[in-house]
Amino acid sequence: MSESVPVRCPACRREHLYAAPSYPCACGVPVTPPLDPCGAPTAVAHRVWEEQWVTVRCASCGRRGQWPTPELGCACGTVLRIPVASRPTPPVERPAFRPVTIRTAVDAVTAAAVYLSRLGYRDIRRADQRPPSGIGLAARGILAQVDPTARQACVRDVECLWLTAMTDSSACVYFSLVGYTEDARARADTLGVPLFVLDLTGIPRPMNGPADQLDESRAV
Image (cartoon, rainbow, N blue to C red; front, side, top):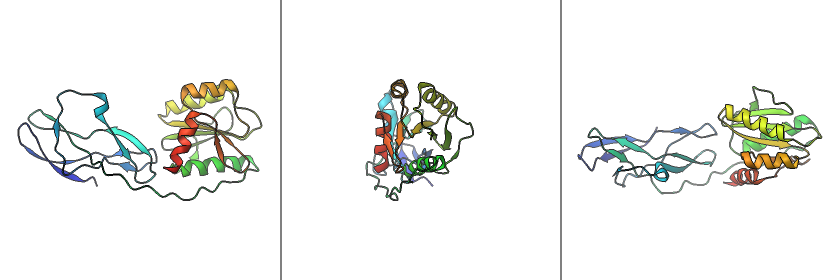
């Protein structure tokens, strides 16, 4: 349950009891901005884009997300911005990453699923829509494609994954055993699709900037 704090409108002096709304993290756990019980609300005179968002860290998976700044509409017509506590959230301890040695196509899919689980994604399953090549995996907020074949992924592979993810309003990630064509890597950079190569020990190696950023979140 969200924490409630007393709020007094600076315009009309009315008293309110406010609880911040929760939003679903990509891992499926509700995230609620921590309110500052000692802070004073401020009236919103004009809106600035940067001030409408607050960074909140998920206590379950450690992922940081941008959520709407808590606000309350008073009966007098004043919109109040509620202060958020600045205290840091304790780091989330995650289990050690245990890669799966790849000998078969099933091992490659399992290795990708283990990595996604390490990132905080839960209930990983086969994707409802089969990709043009390889095997699709899905979890709340993510769509992954695993290509266990001995060929480089091409531009079409990357674009199809991205389009399918966009349709589902999900992020996406591509895992390949042998890598990507130069055109595919360039297109993935443009679209922001993380590209990984699975080595035979089952460890995903980042192959572009978006993959580096995703891999860094693993240690958060």
